[in-house]
Image (cartoon, rainbow, N blue to C red; front, side, top):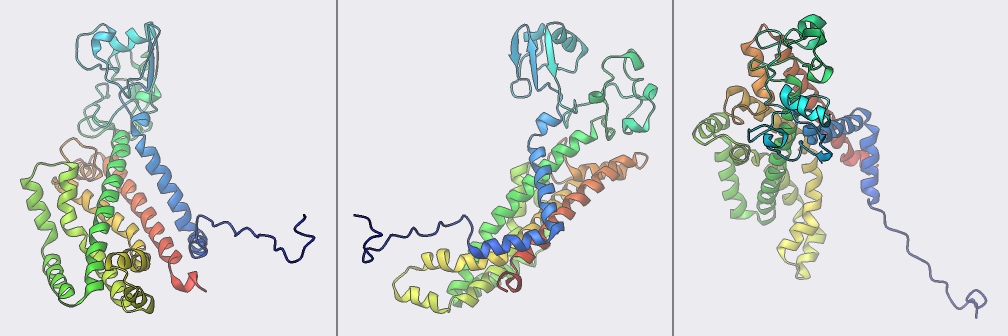
Length: 382
């Protein structure tokens, strides 16, 4: 029997599909996109960051892929001993003319756009390091370090230094690519870890209040009054340098910035009617904090994340500039700034680090402004 023929039988109506974003978050995304400067800064920053994640395929002293005697090799991923190509060393130097001639005679190689890694030393520079970018020199000058000069087959675009070399004859562009990746990864790791600790501490303070809030607040006031930079310098000078060592040292103080915002949100919302109703129904404190109060507190916290990220990158650069940051030889923007200060006759070192830091931090600030507009309740709920 047809259901439409009997008016007493109701036709079931499918509930509307639930989208990935709630209506509130859709309005926030629209407000974010309305800030064109922040919106395009986000895409540009993501593009640069994703490209830096594949730095080994952009700047490396090893071929991406090679064919040798009918065998396909992936030197960028696998360390092949030199004996595979007729040598005797444990590590193959693919930039060596002997190894390059051997592979080209029995196959082929596909190189990255920049044939240098962050630690590669260019032994064919025209004069003592640092050397200027190749486009500031004549063809005869930039090829003068090769055995055959201009006619040398190795004097190609990939072997030239686009942004010059530093005082150890290392390619500046390769060090910028790797240094950008380290700076962003370090900043992201420090920001995420700091947010987890700071949000947890602020939530406990704001929700329980009383002596818990009083004691933690006095501890935070004492802890934040310490001279952070001097303590960082002392600890960094004692402990061996390293990525995770430096991350742990800076994490000791960076979490404090999140506590005040989260504490204020929990203090404001802990006496709301829906929180009292949840307590009356027997919901435990952890569930109330996690499911009911934390989402509201994270709205204010998210607006600070881009600014905290830019501050973390700046702190790492400052420590590297002072010599207390990453291990010696690591690709670092701060170390490049220090080289620019030492080698005033090579302005491309300081200018490259300056423009890289300026562009990176400007993009993060523009993103932060757009995120702040997106979560502004006056624009979201109007």
